[in-house]
Length: 331
Image (cartoon, rainbow, N blue to C red; front, side, top):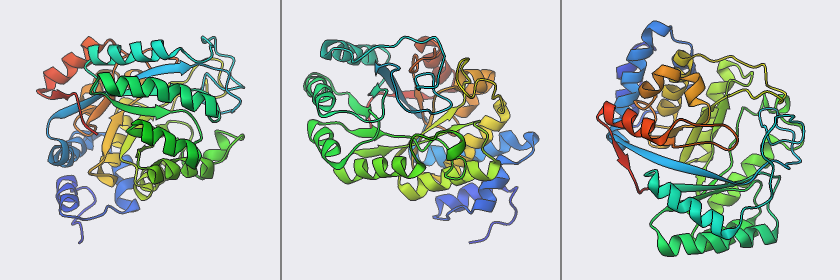
């Protein structure tokens, strides 16, 4: 199927809904389109988003169960071994604290509760600790559980899946070509392996990107294409919130219009998948956050790992003002 013109965004969206797979060249045209075409692009992305998700917005809440103390050197992360950012550092929260977080997730109207821990990979003891909390949460709530605990082997993936963990997050973060500029203590392939192990266990794979880390437009497109090939069900789109004390503290490459084009491009490449406006949306999209929900169908509500989000009431109002509605269940 041929598209009459790369700038006929509505026609491209209609073709995608008919089963057409967007090309790299078409995806790149979205990212590099003039700012004057942003509203047309977002409107076309909404045709796809609405087909699969209507006007529903999925809310997710993160709990940082282990902060800092990480041996990896990821340049964007305030918890890494090379970071000098003044963050709270602590070992694992108790099972009771993790369960309390689940209650807070429900108060924030979030249907998915994300249990996150810093570090390279979890130990057997740490996996068992998470499982104890997950089993109690699943027995007493209807929450969906997502875990993000670092690299995951087949045995640990199987145990988490058996305990009732619905989804596992492990972001690719950037393109394979750009990865060595971001981290040297592990490889892009290590991340792909963990996503594959999560998939093989039966958990839903969650994997996304952090835009604004020096990647080219072509590499931004490659990230989206790689996530499509990997079969990620949920795709968090983070926008670098450069933190003082990290190697990327002076990076500031994004503006709200570029962020909207990146979200739209991700929707065009991965039409049926959950696309989430994630970390850094408040500082990068700013007053245009609301437009992002015409492409994305999911957000984090509340704070992130070491940076503040906006108040849940602001997110609820944003959704209501759009005429959208909160989806409190659903993977």
